Length: 200
Image 1 (spheres, one colour):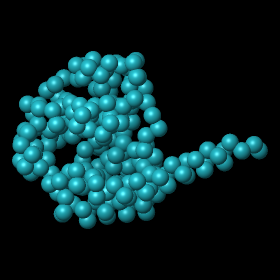
Image 2 (tube, one colour):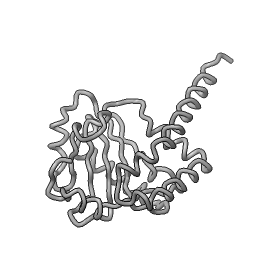
Image 3 (cartoon, helix red, strand yellow):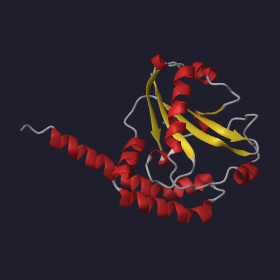
Image 4 (cartoon, one colour):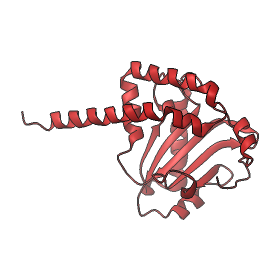
């Protein structure tokens, strides 16, 4: 992680003060997203943004989730990433650069990480070029299938005890479930498109 005055740098202490927390669904998460979306547009400029989307478990009504609002921010390929970074106030947004994150993200911004722990509102903002992203399929699949959403919530609760202070391990442990159902969601989407494209 990049050094930042508001992000604890000692890995052991960081694991303690930024633990995995699971909460029952809270309707205010969608309001937090809407307000942060407005904030990002005002800072970056709507002309530079292709799409902003609420992703992750907080975007699925009824879903147990970490109370962290994930936002997918798709920007035009012409946007200079250094200009974008400079547009976001450093005292609000912690920037993680590409060398420390998955390559699909140009950068990730964290918001709500104080050096004593989480603030009331916490955001992860994933900055990418426009694309056909897995997170959108998985979100919509869970929203349309309460039974699968319940399975996912139960899995997260089971993993909490083992991975409360290991965010990477927690994410990895969920990986097979997420991959399986994302693939199913993509296949279903293909089937729908194929059906709709048939002549009457």
